[in-house]
Length: 328
Image (cartoon, rainbow, N blue to C red; front, side, top):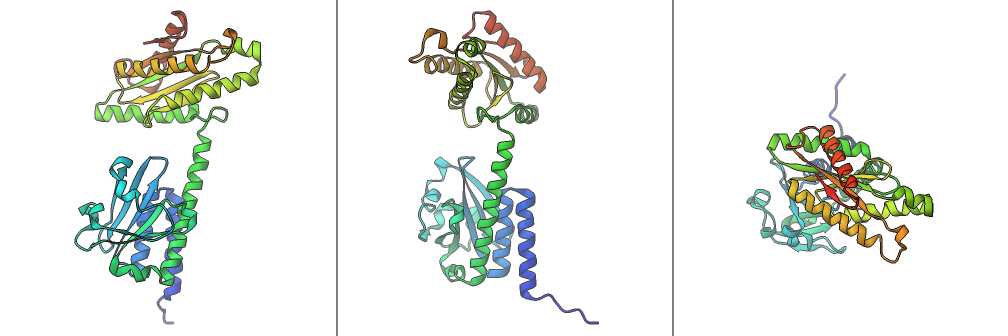
């Protein structure tokens, strides 16, 4: 019996299956982009291509690609450093790009600028395929059209997976992260700080008079207060910081690379904003204030639970000092 080589269609289907396995198994956009560009080289004949992707949750832009016969380069740019790249994304028309907007590590010697091609609408204007001028005709080949549709589907699935995963780590009432995610993030931050000899701080926040408020105004109004405090909290910290629900009316904040003094400034800002924004136009018995306690790695502890214990003790010192205050 003679074995025959698999047909082109069979190889194409098998490669697509492996591509979607990468997308489903990793759930990571960089891996999906790398796998896709390998397909684009093998089945559509592209010698050079890049994918430009706006990472909305990071506030950054990811560029993956280069000479497809060599190991691909993946670089991430913050918004302020990526304005020429960002200008390629809006709209549904093809836009021209010049090689100067790409780092030398990506463009190499084989890029002389070309066309940025929008992908199917499911990517919502956040993805472009950058090809050279001489390769534009390859974009309209049937193989390319099929591959681009599969890429859009894979990235949409990654988005859906991330949203579902994110919801599982969110507190349903306030929308901030829950206790489980807090402990995992705190463990990661402690290990990172130990490895790179960084400092970071943890703050505990507690509403001073929520029980009395609930007794007077009901628990539905109390839930509204918790949501309002969560909004003030998340609006008062940096993107790199993390706010989470710790208990019934307690929140915790992780402040990477923040020493004691810096953490105290953040906590004082939160305290003032809560006292100001949640007291406007309400009776005195409806006013809400918060107390906060701060602990810093490594001076107050080197493990998540020790740091939380120190922050919790500092919080109760703040309450003992008359509430509506910050303590260490």
